[in-house]
Amino acid sequence: MTTTRTTQPAGAPASAGPRGEAPPARRGSPLPLWVSVVLLLAAGTGMFLPGSARETIGLCAVLFMLVLIFMKVPIGIALAVPAMAGLVAASGPLALENVLLALPYERVAAWTLSVIPMFVLMGLLLWRSGITTELYDAGKQWLGWLPGGLAVGTTAAGTGLSAISGSTAGTTYALARIGIPEMLKAGYHKRLAVGSVIVAGLPGQLIPPSILLVLYAGITETPIGPQLLAGVVPGILIGAICAGTLVSISLVRPGLAGKDGGIGNADRATTDWAGRWRTLLAVWPVPVLVVVVIGGMFSGAFTATEAGAAGALGALVLTIWKKWGDHPLRAIGQAAIGTITAAGTIFFLLMGAEILTRLLSVTRVATLFTDWVLGAGLSATGFLLLMLVVYIFLGTFLESMPLLLLTVPILLPTLQALDISLLWFGVFAVFMGELAAITPPVGILSFILAGIVKDPEVHQGQRITLGDVFMAAIWFMPLCAAYAILLIFFPELATWLPSLGAAG
Image 1 (cartoon, helix red, strand yellow):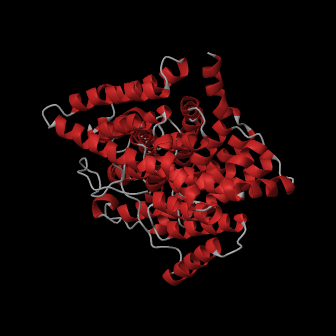
Image 2: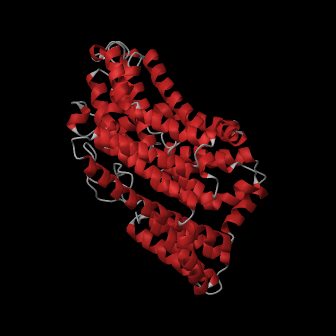
Image 3: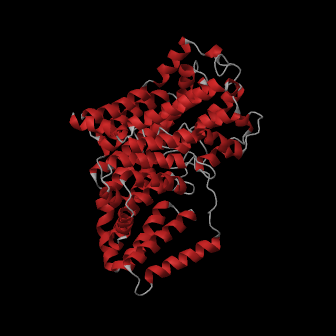
């Protein structure tokens, strides 16, 4: 994903992505430079070698894309350039000319995609309003009575932050800065503190507004409203599972959550009903906005675009209220500029994905994969269990968005052949992308956290290593993997709510 340089809200990192999030820790390419160059030359030669079969051209183009992604080329370019070269090699320059003449307008001018700038604007306005700290305080006040209450509150705040910001990386950055020092001061074990942060963003990309689900809907041409509704129940459920895991750990090993298992620690003095209602008063517009967006789509009162517009309007009013006397117009202007940049980036990504889809269709690569799956006799369940492993593996070097953009066009014919619900698979693919981002040994969020906890203000004098971060993630991996399997065997978790909306 490309990044932009904008003025950031207080506490945000210096460089941020399209949604105002903390930038991923950009690791070097997993391939040596000379290997990348050799593979690029081989792929380019294979595409334009006289007599190359169409299938060979398609596979070489995919290899070209992967190498560019490994080299940290912006994902839109990494998708579009090899796909365009492949179209020229397979069908000639005229085919590419026809695609480029029609595609940019046809792909971006779709009315359903107008929800993207609305949701982006809503997220950026809420971020600029300074609601981050208030959400964390509310989670801490209302959930602090539980065993491991600070950790549970951190996870709850992460769900809300990730949903409104659209960025797991940004949520991780914000919560690590705010939550880890709080928990360490209260006597929490460093691994429990880090673990509560690393899983905090998992539910957020499933609960509307989710840009990843909107992107998936754009690629597969599924209705955006039902696709967003499909993520609600799975998102809430994985959030509850993570919170339950934290409570269970604190009950089994009370010493990990402070002197009294997270209850009655240093925050008891600040946890009272007056404080709770005060924090609720500060953040009540956020759940109201989420309810308006989800409820409007579910009831049929709003289309997805209208729900996004209502959310953006509510976020605008909230930003003016929160920033009154502190340059509200500046915050709104920064959010508007960020929205334009983000929408342009996302639409460019969608165009790259569409060109890739056309190449895969022309060269029959996706069809070959479908034929292989069907020839192997894999059932829908067997195929999805295989994809669970594949997504975790691919997520070790791909971030969630490029993972979706690269795999979904290839898998689409197979999903249709196996009669797998596209609404359900969107939820599964987004969750697996987020899960892969925290999976050791190379999950991107693990490296982001490892960098943040080096700050003395964060680690509070305790040495927190990359190994500690990995171990914190491993504590949650079995239940998260089991949850992914649960989704496979009970797809109704994702399809139930959209079906009620359709019935209504």
